[in-house]
Length: 383
Image (cartoon, rainbow, N blue to C red; front, side, top):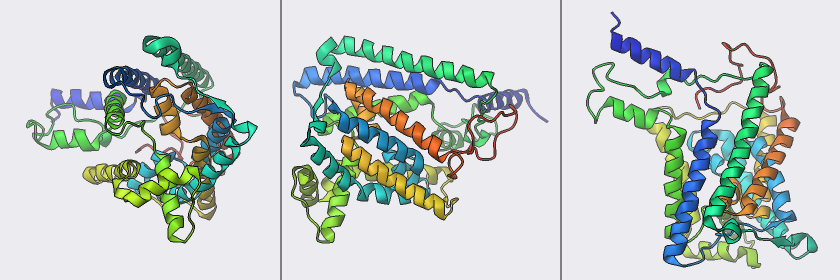
């Protein structure tokens, strides 16, 4: 016999599973970046040092070109730089393939950036919004930018709804939090319910945003550097090539050589990247959902590898990726973060158009008309 409590909980779980909020991530992202900007203001004014990377990257041809190439590669590989690490932790073999070429092509990207910097194409400027508007003004300008993005997403969503081409993605019930005592095992704090809600369920966008804000500020205060991912890939690539007898003495390789000489486990970027991979694997192991995914063919492997190579080349040409250039750039109030983000999206759009229906992770058409009660076969609903 079903009790009223069970009926209420079942109804709430069903209602939650049918919702897929598209705008909540944007709101959480805006709050995340504003919190970091406020934290930056407190750190800079209390410690009184000009932190490395606080002004972000330099605006110029090299940044734009690197962003476009990186965006295309991310679509082809099905992940970004940090995404490759977390996807490997989740057991996605395609990410392992992409990461190998990502690392190997980081050195050519560094060499291309150094070569272009020595030409008129390497001319660039640095625009730090707090220097122009102060931190209150920089936060206001950033909020205006977030609102513009929000409005664009809202308008595009309405257009897709009018065309009946919107997918309703249902979250499996086993990934939703347990709302209350439904089986006699959830009445204790240290019990099944706590374990399930911490390790089996999807955290809310806001919870994740606040944890990322804390992590970013922690990295900034402890290392005096903005959070980056791909510079460590250059270090790994230089270290691998050094094992083969190939050494680099150019200026761009000095930090990598120093990190290798000091021991990779003493390098902050290396430790953080390994922690991303291990943390993702640990989370899925705790939830009992870890598995290796090899759902691809030989042609897909070639595209994954090419995508990883483009990401490695583009990220190091631009001296950053979606974490080091976009996330950290926006977080410190750098105009380069906005520019990199725009051209990354343009590159991703080109990649989607070129490989639509030609790669197992990109559906044949994103504009097919769907019945609201039916999900397309290609959609992965458990991630």
